[in-house]
Image 1 (cartoon, one colour):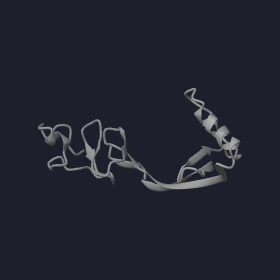
Image 2 (cartoon, one colour; image 1 turned 30 degrees about the vertical axis):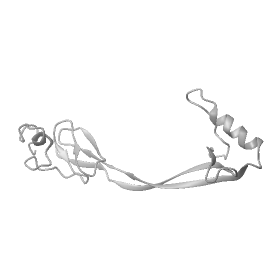
Image 3 (cartoon, rainbow, N blue to C red; image 1 turned 135 degrees about the horizontal axis):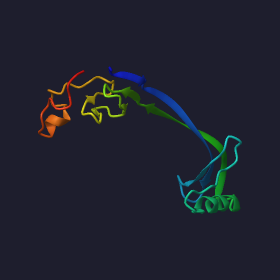
Length: 138
């Protein structure tokens, strides 16, 4: 088996819609709450904490202090790392820009290139072991 890229690295734009309230008494402060695709505020809690619900009700109860800026959509650019299938059949996410380690001992760069086990990039060498152990190129 040879090494192959299963998924290429890519940049994605993700977004999130939130209902935002600005605090008029504390500059730069406020609250925002996630909304569903139907623009309904989501106030669920996975840990039994009702602080989001309490904060939302606080914002609604004092419209002079908390200015409702409505629903806004924020955007972020994210990097989705490539996935590589090692020669040992393990799937490896190439998330490190320096060295990505496979369980079999092979090391790959960010682009999926196998690092030379005889250089300082070899983890086995850095740990004082045999550079040839588990790092043969198939």
